[in-house]
Image (cartoon, rainbow, N blue to C red):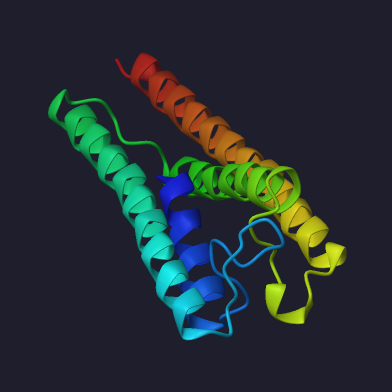
Length: 159
């Protein structure tokens, strides 16, 4: 789910609200962001990007509902939020490496001439989201384990 939500943050915030770039505005994307034809093509491709991110969220929601139907316990909030953040970080690292560096179809700040620092900061932020998310998720597991151990100890001490 974090991968899809990370894609929504990228698409909605960077593409639509801030208008820093679109999917094909980089040196290898071939579609300028300052012409009507370029914006029409980029809007279409951005739409396909949003469909893909929506599919990630929809599949994750389906899997979550299926787990609840099987009466599997929901993760603690720390675990759930941590994995959402880690998924967002995975999106940033994979999308940033492929689209910004390997393919060059767009960069974080195509509106400024695609300075490398912004692309590197995007990757670093993704790495921080992964590490921070995993640390948060792990702390949720430890907290849950400690709570379960306390419950078992109290139950065992009852006459």
